[in-house]
Image 1 (cartoon, rainbow, N blue to C red):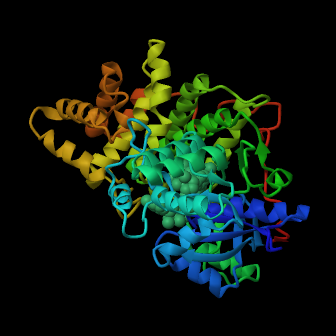
Image 2 (spheres, protein in one colour):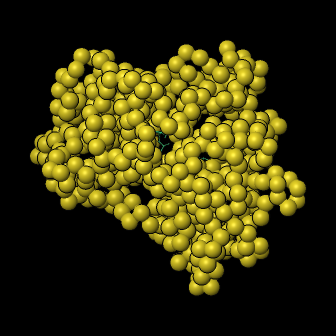
Image 3 (cartoon, rainbow, N blue to C red):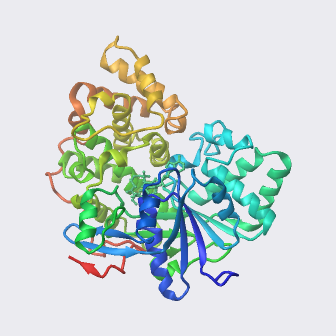
Length: 513
Ligand SMILES: NC(=O)c1ccc[n+]([C@@H]2O[C@H](COP(=O)([O-])OP(=O)(O)OC[C@H]3O[C@@H](n4cnc5c(N)ncnc54)[C@H](O)[C@@H]3O)[C@@H](O)[C@H]2O)c1
Ligand SMILES: O=P(O)(O)OC[C@@H](O)[C@@H](O)[C@H](O)[C@H](O)CO
């Protein structure tokens, strides 16, 4: 309980679907331990979820979609919500309020303004530049955090935890570094004060977050209604969820561990497994799905040739991982195959494929370099890059009516590079020029693979094959005919398919139908 006798509070920045199906559910379940915490949700600029939650007395439904079974449960741990763009000063105030013990975030990769090459704060991004020129309320996530923390340091000096729950490599450590970069760019007095407070009183634990949470559609509104809940903003989710974090909380935390979350010092190992095997495979499924006219991840996963490529990608990722103790990687991969195949999730390839230039930077280069150092060029990783480049540089090749076109903040830049390759010289030459120019661009995989000619050539070769023979020819070039379609690989292990700490289903949903 806080000083005023009320429950402790979490301020959550980024009131998208994921937070509402993951941390908010675990926080509600942790409250059963007798120490309930409340969440104030902050949406960036969109009012839809905030207004609907207020109309619904701050309750909403999580619609859990198993391959065959639906469960609907009510969540009430978010007790207030507002829109940052409408009340910018309130964000600063709430961060500074000592009753706020944790500030958590799900603001997407692009919400951090990370320079992809250095992994430091991009001081040239318009949001950060604007926030460093004092005067108006901050607009970037890092600027908002800095303003709130500075005020907190001055008003109470109370400790606080910043908890990133985004798919960002070493998310807590990275966030701490970005805030320090911002502080270093502030006027001397403010910067020193913020740095001192960050050192003394703020922790930023790393986390690994996992649950496939698609966007809401009318199907989910109907399922909630059938379970008795008129809900404008229900959240669909798969049954599986997992949350791993380091237990470094400066001002307490909910009993998340009693609700299934894992506290460990080995977060990085869990995170690498997840970001590579799940998110890396998801990216490959999305881009190959888009290139073959599949709107849904499950439809891409059902294509035997794409499934073979995903297995090969897993084979390439696996030796690059340091596995957490007791982690059965073949069981995890087998279960991933089942999660990707869950058609009822209707997870769209455009959603998973969005912002590829930022996401692939975290999913691809380290694993590629691992193989190159050992004298091998990893073909499925090259296929991931080629398929993303093909979707992004030539969106006119995609069928907007069947699958759609994914957005990418660097899309214009990549299309300009493709435009400069011209039409002369044939497909092979154009592919080589595009692969070279884009991998040399800082915005693409952080430039980290540009000097590795053998990898760039493999990407170029695959782009050329896609141009002349389509995605099917590129798949054939990488995987050949492979094992018989539908053959399960890797083989199902004798041990449980659930990794340590994974939750087969959130426990509280009493309604089944
Ligand atoms: N959906 C999932 O399956 C899933 C699973 C694991 C982790 N995550 C993490 O959660 C993030 C959000 O996923 P979601 O499903 O809630 O998406 P969503 O589209 O429902 O919500 C996105 C949220 O990010 C905010 N946002 C977007 N761009 C921003 C920017 N430039 N600056 C600040 N805020 C910004 C939006 O205001 C919104 O609140 C993902 O990007 C990922 O890092 C999602
Ligand atoms: O959330 P993103 O945009 O980083 O990536 C899209 C999906 O791969 C991702 O949301 C997964 O569904 C999720 O990471 C599963 O835990």
